[in-house]
Image (cartoon, rainbow over all chains, first blue to last red; front, side, top):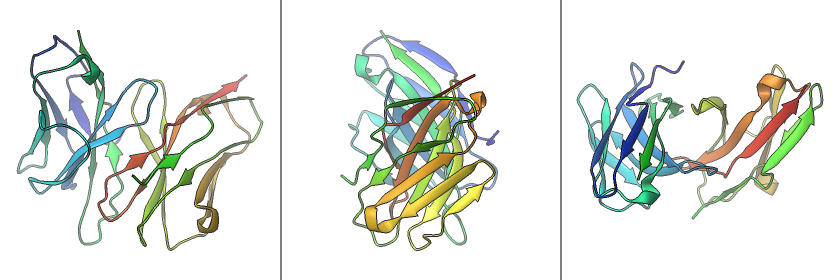
Length: 115
Length: 113
């Protein structure tokens, strides 16, 4: 158990809809990263939040957006869902800065299916 | 893009055999970090190890060992005396100064009883 939680576990949406996924980071961690893992592939980096600011973004369109809250929990929002957005969405928390080791600990993921 | 390559898509071994999972990475960073994660069927990525680019010492943890060779840009993972519970997808990953992880495509390991 990493202490990183994600909700919901599973979600089914229709093309064109919007979705919000949530992540609670491990206690003491100040950084949250989001990854998309399509079936049979490795996770792909979406973006990272450090102390409520976006701190890096992968090759994903602007309809993927996020937030980090003062308690370091985070949301991933996806607008105008497409069929290709069907994937496992993974959240990872880490401690950055100072003596932080930057090791990322992952939550169980949210399985999103777009029909 | 600074890629991570795991050429072995699937490996199948019989319990108690040793197995090595290969990982080759590209990097332009002077300082970088290499990782291995295990993903069982439940889906959660389990952290196994992190190595810093300036520390080429090999590491052993129980039945697991890692061989980091900068000269060949490789970070291989060996499981000794494999067990059925080792069956999972294993991912190698790297991060540089940006701290974001770049993953390989994974190796599906099946350990047969």
